[in-house]
Image (cartoon, rainbow, N blue to C red; front, side, top):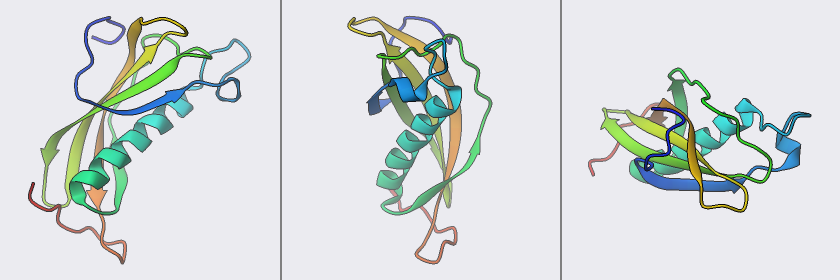
Length: 129
């Protein structure tokens, strides 16, 4: 459930600080910035698994349960849910560690599909684990 204070699932793949340049006038971090961090985390995790270049092919629906605020540490957790021939499906959870506390709150989640590419930019098989 989004917004719960349960424990994150997956591997901590990216941690970054939400800064004033990433926020609107009310101090809420732009959703697009949060999504970009999720995309970066998926790129890191998928490239490690593919042992090479990957691109984002699709992102399933995202809904924000609560805002990320300036000063929060954004924590992105990824889990490879499925490996196909040339693609990988990753489950992603994004949590905010609230500024100067140990409080962690889940702010959103999504499913990303990443595709492995060869040197010519064509889909290539994902190596066996």
